[in-house]
Length: 337
Image (cartoon, rainbow, N blue to C red; front, side, top):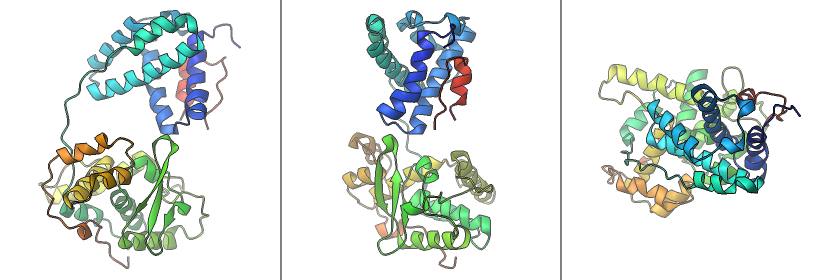
C-alpha cells in the first residue's frame, strides 16, 4: 500500500469495486453513475479547492464541502435533477463511510441530511403513433445496415426497454415463436419478460437469419460494425440518423428524438389505448407506481388509438478492474469503463 493513500481514497475504492457491485448487486451502469459523481467531487476538491488528493482525508469530507460542491455544479450549468442525482450518490457514499469509520459518523450524517432541490415537472416528450411508425420504417431493410437499424428501433419501441437493456440483450433473451417475448435485464440486475408483437418477432428472426445465424445463444443480439455489442452512443447515432433524414424533408417532424423517447412514446401509447397503469408499471419495470404515474398526468391526446395499432408496421420480407492503492485516485476512477 502506498504511504500516500488516504482513508478517503481507500473508501472510494471499496465503495465502487466491492460494496455497490458485490454487496448491493448494483448494475455496472449504476456503479458508473456513482463513479461519475465521485469523480466530479475529486475534480472540485483538487482544481477548485486546491487540495491535493494525498492531503484529503475523511476529516475534510463534511457538509460545507458538499454544499459548495453542489453550488459549483449549478454554476457549471448542471440541471437541478442532475445535481440531485450527484447528491444522492454522495449521500450513499457518506452512509457507507459512516459504517466503516464510526468516528466520522456525526459529520457524515450532516452530509446525508442535505436536502435535494425541488425540480419542476418536465413535460413528457413523445412521438405520435404515426410519427413513430414513420421513424421505425425509415431504414431500408433490404440493406444489411438498414435491417439492423430497423431492428434496433423496433425493439426499443415495442419492448419499451431502456437503451442499456437493449444493448445488453443476448440472443437467448429473445423468443420469436408463439406469443413472442423479450427478457430484459433492468436496474439492480433485475429482469422482466415483456411481450412483443408478432411483426417484431418476424423482424428479429429475419435479422438473426441474415446477420447473426452463426452466433451463439450467449452472444449479443445487436452488434456494431466491429462485431462488438452495440453501445448507448451507437443506438442514439442510429436514431439521430433517421430523425435528421425525416426532419430535412418534413420540418414539422421533431428535430431531436432521444432513445428514451421511444420508451416514453410506448408508455403514452399504452395509456392512450386504455391499458391499466399497473400493467404499464410492470411492463416498464418501474418499482414504484408513482414513477409510472407521470404518464397519466401527461398529455394523453392519443387515447382513442387502439392497442392493435401500437405494433410497428414491419414489412414481412423484410469487470471492474482491481484497484491498486499505488494508483492516483483519478486514474483509478477513469479506469472504470
